[in-house]
Length: 117
Image (cartoon, rainbow, N blue to C red; front, side, top):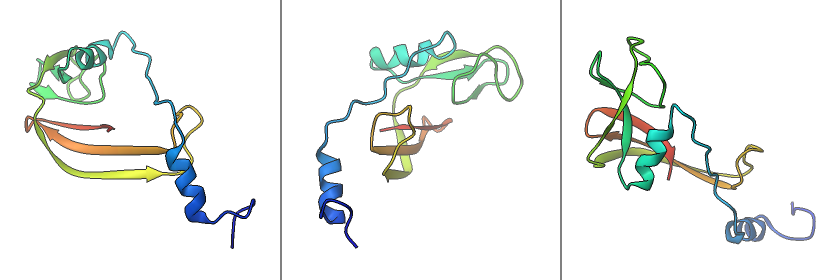
């Protein structure tokens, strides 16, 4: 079965993959601004709780474990990618892309992170 227009699935997917799409650009908030500023500084800056010495993600004003105020620490930016997935297809309306790669890694052996790559 062919999609409308007489094109096959492979042709339609190839056309989608060559379309120029604008990547999603987040709007930083007062809570996650240090995380995004770290990217501009070429540093992976993640939330860290001094109260319980715990890294966590996503950024939050308080630690999700002990509810103490949280801050940010720079990491070395090294880590191991344990798995990844590439989702191709229709995107949510607020994301202007047809392909999304997500990775899950352990950074500095102390923090799980999930994000677009």
